[in-house]
Length: 233
Image (tube, rainbow, N blue to C red; front, side, top):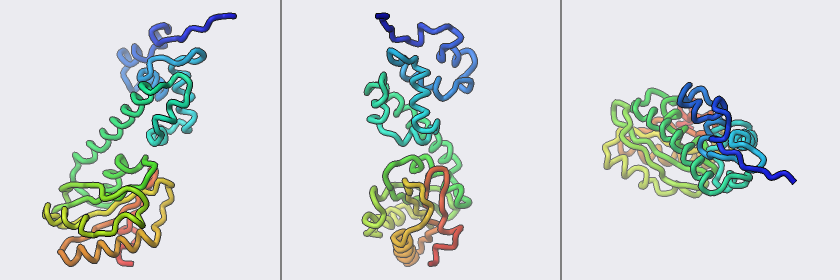
């Protein structure tokens, strides 16, 4: 019976090696599968690293955002992907996510719902669980800070409004933007969303702090309470 040999990238023809291709033609010349192949280095007995990477991508409809939502356990379900390789892929995707965050934060000023959504997309857009965040702004609508208030279902998490308003007071914020994600991708505000928004808005007004918006973040889409006229419901 023929003996199979695991084919490492260094064994490939020079023109087929993703590393050399990156060095000679630049990172933009590589496909997503080739970039992942560089991370994992080798495939399995039946597949090259690129072929394995293509199969991983096919399992998430070739959607890198969807791949970013997957756990290391998902990655390790593929033959040839152990813990170290799974961690490498996860770390690379996280770096890409943080780069997006840094690009948005450099803008540092919110002029509308899209600016706020662009800020929160890298943070919340690919999560499998729900998180509730608050952004603090000064009088010029420049970002002072942002922080997570809670994880889990919104109906049972944001109860004590003081947890939100104390940092706003301490940092002299003039306004705040509320944001949480819907991992399901459903862009509809629930009764709990509306009630919590109203509760926070009424409490903030007593302290001369304005709730400018409440965003619901999905995958590549968002709902703005302000744009939809829902802040005064």
